[in-house]
Length: 215
Image 1 (cartoon, rainbow, N blue to C red):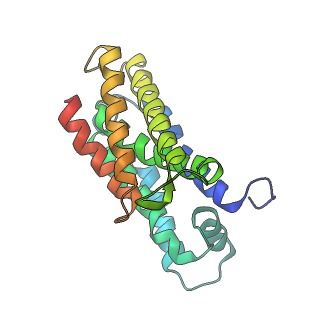
Image 2: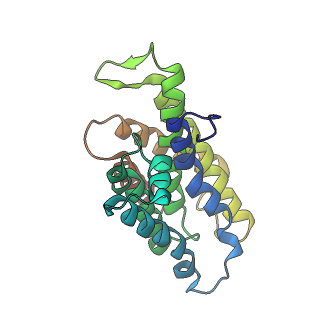
């Protein structure tokens, strides 16, 4: 964004979309020891601390400004304590609670990152003429992108963890994909609601639905 290749909002949403899934791709590299999850949790913990410091500091440190510009809508440092900070806390919580041996956390993070992130990117480009009548800031194109990318990210990561021996598939693949697609569709509907922050309403809903339909 700083070089003018991407708009600031696009840069922020690409960070939102890819940060958690790319980190999750490397989870199989951690040992099988029970304490491995705590070691992995250091990454979102450090990022949460950095965001907290950047958002609450009164100094004019250039590094803090650059961090705020990368993750906030308007470059306001206080915004770092909103969605970006919640994102790190959700990632931290998912690692500690579910780690890589349960599809629940994977689906929750995929919905929050891939689904919600791509909904914004696609919605702003293709959703100008198909706004939802009950939620004019959201579009049908964005909702479809949420559903599609949330499903793709979830299925892809679950298969990756199965391939690397981290988890067993809870259902045969066709049924698993169907269940994940339905969970993603429900989360895309929840994302349309005007209350709460998508960074917690979406993953919390995904956890509840995944617990009901996948475990």
